[in-house]
Image (tube, rainbow, N blue to C red; front, side):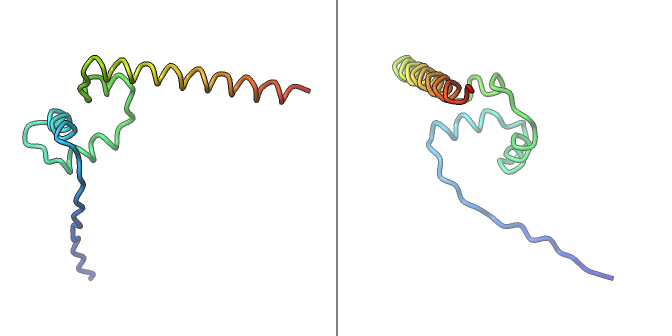
Length: 88
């Protein structure tokens, strides 16, 4: 017979206070952070599942929206240029 003993390794991560508060609010009562991370990483998340996970002030939100719009526009132009090059 084999006698197997599982040992748990421990990792330390550094997060901001804001991130900690956001993650803490996702925990179920009695759930450890390890259990939370396993639960969240094992299910397929949809973007709407993340709504409210990060708190932003209006200025930060506006900046994020602007950068997102600029990225989408740049990506769309890039895709269009690549598409044109592929036409025979």
